[in-house]
Length: 272
Image 1 (cartoon, rainbow, N blue to C red):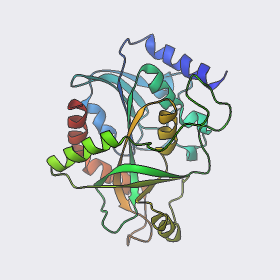
Image 2: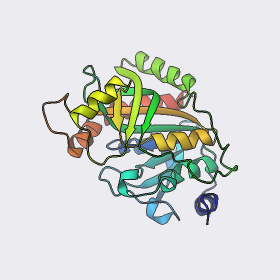
Image 3: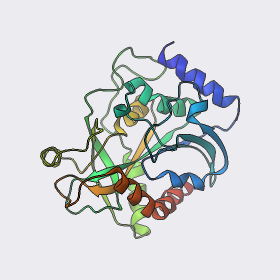
Image 4: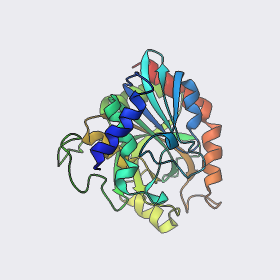
């Protein structure tokens, strides 16, 4: 069974339970899953109950897919994601993205927890992703190209939609929520970066670093989706903080900013 067949089988399983056709998809990163409470009339699917959908193994990723409404818009919201460092092959990491696209999603909002690479960034800040550096060591499109998904050599000149970035920037300014804009660096993990690696990432143009998002963004653009990326800066990267890094800090920061995050993201979607 190839990737297209696996994706179609998953979509068929979802379609047997709901006729909702989401136009906006969201992936909620570590500590940000509370936003799913904003979804109205939600039909909920556990990743474990969907064929070929890998269940997350990381605390802070509940592993649920919700289809419902936010304002006038139909949405598909993933509470959590799987990562390459969990042992999954790239095609498994991006399968949920493929499924969202085949369900009808046109705009994919990718959120994550990230370490800040700039001294001006503090835990709890938000960053609009302007571009990325793929330092994972793989490209999720490697291997046979299926034309049903997209072209062999997709253009990546504008992975993160300038139009949607500008709209979100205007909204955050209006709501008086401080934010940054910058380049997201994706590394494989699961170990956090060393201080030397952090200095290197900053020197090559990075603004924040994490272990997700980029495979999904590449797969989404391959299929013609618009992409908006948002990082929650949950900690200062190694060498910039006096305390050791921990996943507990990531979750705690996500919980602390949950209300603000949900407020601006819900408003953003409602105003589209």
